[in-house]
Amino acid sequence: AVAQAVGARLRGLTEEDSVLLEAMVPTARLPLPPPRSPAPRLPMALRICTLVCRSWGDRPQLCQVACAVGRAESPVRHGAALPQGLDSSLQQWGVAAPGQRQALARRLREASEAAMAALVASEAELSPQQRGGARARTDILGVDFLLACVDGALELVALATNSQRCLETCALAEAMGRAVGEPGGELARLLSEAMLHRAQCHLVEGKDILLIGAGGVSKSFVWEAARLYGLRVSGPGR
Image 1 (cartoon, one colour):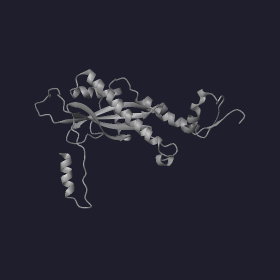
Image 2: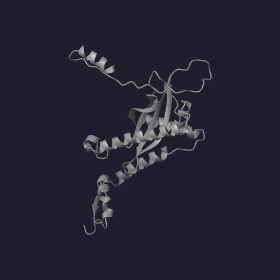
Image 3: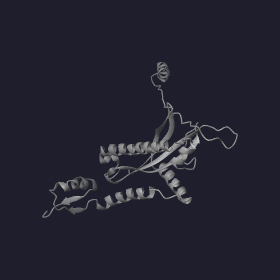
Image 4: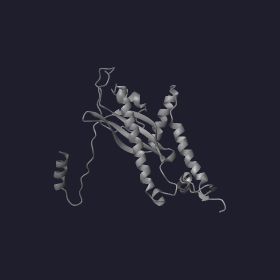
């Protein structure tokens, strides 16, 4: 039906006209608990914000997840609602089975880290000028998802990627959890590791190192690491 509508529209266009086609993803509508008031409950949407960092060895690692609930007829934006955890949000949304919530959390981790891995691989193919500099790269990535329902099954639909807004939302969720006595998460540690690793790379850039036993197979990784860190390698007597 969509293809027929677009085709019919195209036949009536002039040379300078065009058709913009956007995907419509319905939000998940699950059986919710009975409302506390007799007022009708409006359809709601669940936006899931994830923050992924580049860990050691360029491995993507999920740092934090925060959820926000809003009206289904308008986009759920960052800052429009207080963030809350994924598990509690899914329970409020009607996902009662622990196994189903764990499966969604696992798929969310895989999708978020896959997005970061794709970005890392894409940046590796760019020249320093295309990346914006010799050491320019993405260390922190935010990925927003919408909990949707496709053919009766819950699906995670990626909406957009960003860094600052997801970082703000996830940091707020972490701080709110600490304020009510929840154990601290891994957000601060993982972000600190990513920043310290970048700082260490800048400190050793352009330095000389003396490598002993460079002919061994066990030292083969040094050459690639030296290239990445901008080191100059020399051996005894050189």
